[in-house]
Image 1: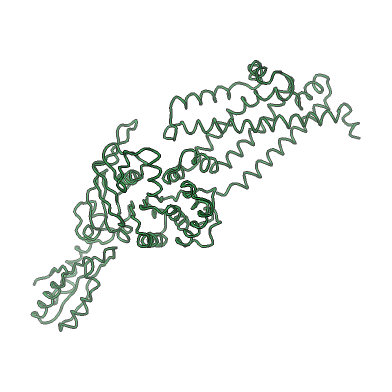
Image 2 (image 1 turned 90 degrees about the vertical axis):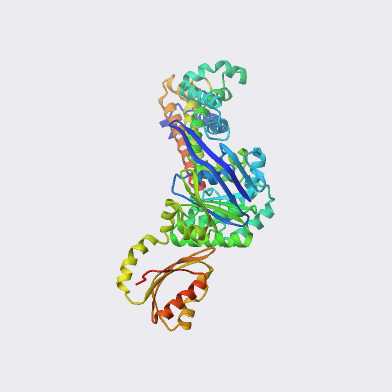
Length: 341
Length: 222
């Protein structure tokens, strides 16, 4: 759907050249929710604007829908933009237009006749859950409602790609969740490819399938969200992952756990993806005559399944404990025995 | 009673002068609005990072606006005598005032248009571009509607200045309340004529301000 080959973007300012994006290669597949995470200044805002030609790359190739958008003229680029729409952190609605008129704006640009515009606007108002608010002005809406208008507006011309520029960063956590749910449902219902940039790991965790981590203009790590979460390679990725699952804190307490639970065996289970839904714990208790004690747990849910760690204390016959550990192993759950004494 | 208080006021003449001033103000305000908007849009769109970014065009428009905004109006009228004679054919009567009025006021309004356009949220312009809008669409559907309250209050202020300018133009023979106050009032020493002309001009200014305020409040949905 979208691929970037060796894309760089430099800005020349009075203070010298600023490299916003450097040698970035990405491949975003159709129907995917692709997240790009980085701190501010990492170049992600520039990167997302390269995807609809709002910024032109200094070098490299950007293929959107089999078209190299760096090589097409303004007229064609405007047509591409009707199929690659965008939502913004600050919504960017026209205050002079009502909700319905804002949603109709891209349809006017595309030259859709008035009657069809009205029908489509009503469909979209229902889709984003703003029934009865069509005649309101943006100033009469809450932040979450404004972003819903932004989403409806972005969907008006039935785009194939939706670019989200920090779409939830100006919203409170609860509203963020409802907007993210809306994005997932749109992705599922319409098969839309979504590319989003954010500095919040929770957003990636909640809705993305693939993630790219950006630092100083480079994509330093990329892959399936679960893999990246489970096994972060770069220091910056580890920092982002720790926003969700503070494993360093967990390690500190293992020493304390050993002292707190001196009996039996402490084992750490690592879950990646589907295994979590399997009733491992209940089978463990039913099949083996053991006392199972949950010491610590931390499970997070992503679009690709759950991941996290669970620390159990197994007490009972030593032979049975070994058997139980072997059983857990067979379930393809990462197992690690913490105290071997 | 009224005739005792203002013995020298010729009321039909006063009414005629009022209509002339209204006519000059209305027509020159409309022309100023159009030319000022075009100049203001040019200034905005040719500035860096905008759709028609062009240093030379921006500099030329800016220079034109600054020069004509800086010339005192009374001198501008004299400087424009040849142009007025060429365009209107005469130096007398209300129509002869238009070239000077518009050339004096349009650059002033153009600056206000530029300020109004700069106030528009950059994000909204970016959003329109991201939807595939052409520059003409951006002008008609984003720039003008989104800056409308500021444009209206700007033309209100400009219209009020134009009332003053018509009075000045009156001194060199354009007609209207200015001519009346100067020739019939001041030069003949009839203070009551000058006083009534002033009161009528004040009323006109208050009405323009009131209309401008009402429209601005009504269209501002922010």
